[in-house]
Image 1 (cartoon, rainbow, N blue to C red):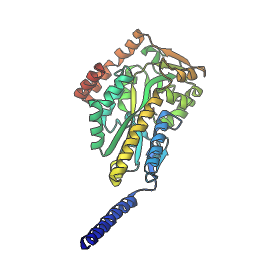
Image 2 (spheres, rainbow, N blue to C red):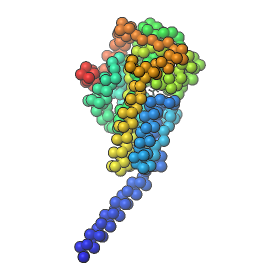
Image 3 (cartoon, protein in one colour):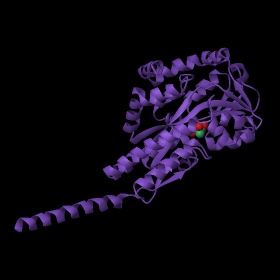
Image 4 (cartoon, rainbow, N blue to C red):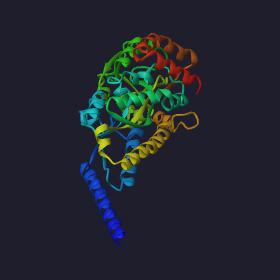
Amino acid sequence: KFSALVKAFSLFFAAMACLSVTSAQANNYKSEYKLSIVVNATSPWEQGAQIWSDLVRERTEGRINIKIYRGASLVQGEQTREFTAIRQGVIDMAVGSTINWSPQIRQLNIFSMPFLLPDDAALDALVQGEVGKQLFALIDKAGVVPLAWGENGFRQISNARQAIQLPEDMKGLKLRVVGAPLYMDILTALGASPVPMSWAEAQPALANGTVEGQENPLSIYLGSRLYDAGQKYLTLWNYMNDPLVFVVNKNIWNSWTEQDREIVRQAALDAATQEIAIARKGVAPEDDSVLKEIASHGVEIIRLTPEQHNAFVKATRPVFDKWKERIGPELVEQALQDIENR
Ligand code: X2X
């Protein structure tokens, strides 16, 4: 009898201890977690963030409640400061592009190496392989917890002046780019006049003609109705593809229970898988519905011959070589090998 009593007591105390841990942790939870995205229109990017937050809310039964902030509004639109803000805790979570975080982590420039990625399988080989692992380790070391790779998409170039088929056609073209140095180098090498600005500033600048062109995935071109901003010439040159990364600030991550962390991680992986499928829809020869929709707005869609493609590759080769040194020759060699073996 006595031992039964002891057992009952110890069970009771164990239960109390559990309860107090749970409530202490629950008390550390915020009522809302701020998730940043850069785009401000419907896009696969935003859909991915929405799927992630819905899955997390459902699976944690409302313990973790995520609110999406569009247009990099938590950093007043300054998208190249987003990573620093996540690190500092101004932003709790994000689905962010490697381009915008490349000023802080230079190795993330690898995806923007001109004409490095020939197709979707090449990007998959990088993010799912050794390169992806090393980049996640760098993000983690910087104080941000990376959970899953998503995708913005192959970036295509549009402008209001003329059809671009060769580097010569870009001469002096005022082209908006993200404020990341590699982009300045590439577009300058092609003869254009790149103007760095945020995406928030880019849209009015395109509409009023301050800049004549831009480069972005087709989903963003369409979602932001760039055909209405005079962007009537669209060249499919596939010069790079920026992956998205689903991340959480490290202190926030550590404030969650083991169980909730696992839920958030799995939800990120599930959401990212769906997001990549959405991002790739409608832009392939098998299903070109996005391209058809763009064309239906009177946009001229230009495809390059192999010779024209090679002219762009050749003109950007010095930039490739310069940035191979900056990013780290070993990482770039690893990437080339993984692409070869894909
Ligand atoms: O600013 C852009 O071009 C965008 C939306 O694609 C990124 O955030 C990288």
